[in-house]
Length: 356
Image (cartoon, rainbow, N blue to C red; front, side, top):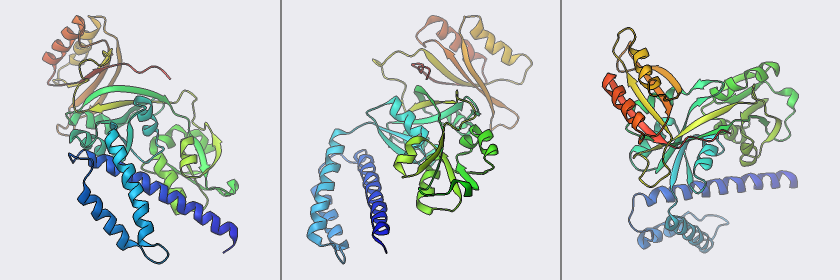
């Protein structure tokens, strides 16, 4: 191997080491939820004994012990600080992580494999909050998330709306003229449909935008690009071919923060509410429901319908409207809506997101 190749290999190994250390710290913060004491001497001694036994070839046991003494010390520090854990779907660099950082700048962001994992880990208390996308300005509702909102006991504790600007990126040194395929999340591919067609690329769906970037770095498939956030270029050492490739500059996604409990007393008062309901199969039922809100001058900002999987032929309606659940007209509207509904769920009252 030549000097340049060896240095490139070292850079790759260093990237992988830091990535694994980051994962270890995430596990340490998760572990804090399951134990009472930060310092557990017996467990720390066990870890040191294990890593000493793993030392092979060039690594000396004493060096490994010194290294892990520092790592354990950093884990202790993070556990003692005990930041709020907010889960998101995807890999680091996902737009959901950007939304989580916007919602709670001091939170520790924890990646989850799927939307179901975000919901279940908030329900079981493994995460303090979760953040999930509910609708995009170009592609509409995120159906899986809306279904999960109706099936779980979680509340909406807040929302954030962020602009979505996609980048086409490749492995460094790739000849752009050889590109044949592009990987990304189906929503991102849909948001860049015109660009993909003009570029004569084959769109290949992937579970996550950042996951596609991570896959490209690790698997290095030929003639392949990915669509992801600019942040992913830095995280996964990729080259940006073109920025802002979304079909419309106004592209934005609304995310909601999930909590096991309603917003605690003392937090900022909400000015937006969300409900889910189903209605009897009678003519005029939906009109009558919407009239409950219009009669009280309550502005509805979103209405979506989704088929009920447990009741074929029936639909759940998702409704967002402006106002606080402490306002008299909102209280009256909620009481009337609940009485008229076949099923009814109040998702929460929370501060409305500022427009991006």
